[in-house]
Length: 63
Image (cartoon, rainbow, N blue to C red):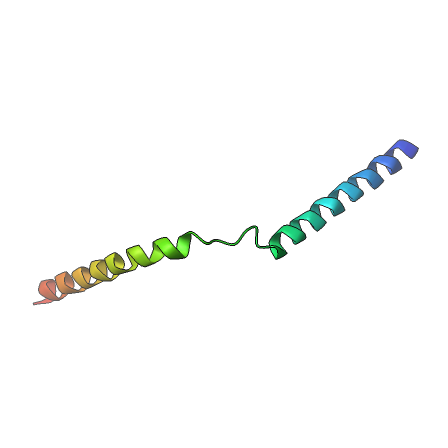
């Protein structure tokens, strides 16, 4: 029975270490996405053009 208490204590300590490391990495900017915004601006115009094509084809179908 004492082995279970020891394993439980060790597992909680390991979980706390991982939690502290995760919080530290999030606060230090490890997971910040610096690539997507620079690529998103390249594809915004294509999305707008596609929407305008869809609306113009829908208007033609209604006529």
